Image 1 (cartoon, rainbow, N blue to C red):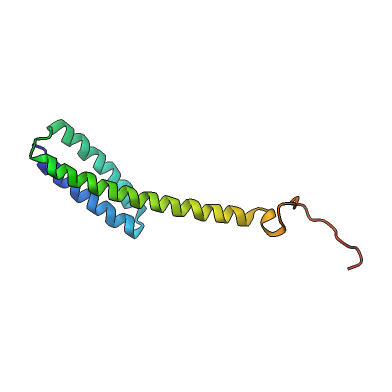
Image 2: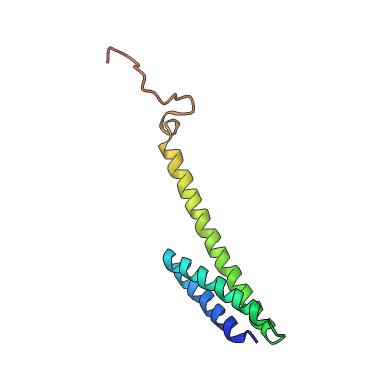
Length: 108
């Protein structure tokens, strides 16, 4: 029943993967909205026994894309943590640093 819709969803997932690999965030966001509409449409149409194998493929593609997204988020979180550590005062002066400039010697 929903075979055409599921085929469209499969194609959308493949396009989403390509967009993820290219880093095309706007395309990924558009695809997410389109996928949601296709899933709703497939639910309304109802799934037949014939659709089960295609649905397994779709779930596999979705899990693969999810793994790409999670890896990307992990990378961004790690990069953010590195930047945050680099910008804190104790990064260059040790944990005891107060963050304020101190006069060590007037003689220097």
